[in-house]
Length: 173
Picture 1 (tube, rainbow, N blue to C red):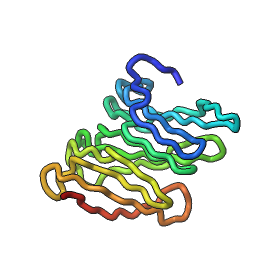
Picture 2 (cartoon, helix red, strand yellow):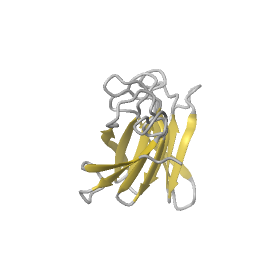
Picture 3 (cartoon, one colour):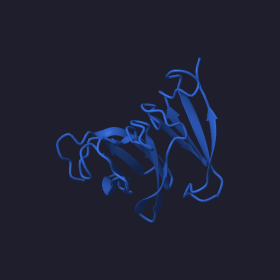
Picture 4 (tube, rainbow, N blue to C red):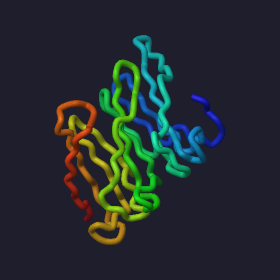
């Protein structure tokens, strides 16, 4: 953990038991504002210790990895909110990491099926059991910036999320 100026450490945070994940959207280790996520664990005495920092396996400037983060057991999801997919700016990309022992490693990147620039896929995240919900508030699938939530299901029974099935629902009032 280097803690350099403008890292924006604390951009997002999630706790699950004795595990924490913290986003730093301004981290520049892999390029300007590529971002990073850091994992911490709490020992039996209640002290928190830094475990590991991850950057994207495919970093790009201004991705802002760590914009949204969530951890549940040995699975974590985190977003590069301004990530680019197939040339569409700010579509967003969700990264999935798993923990083996005390080591976290990225397993998958989930790109939106709708390639609308600025949709911000991954603006919000939630994990419960084998489900991952991904918010995209600027999605135009059901109208200009109507937004949507995409729910993915882990159908393999493992924590790797290698086989996901999307169920798209536009949420609006």
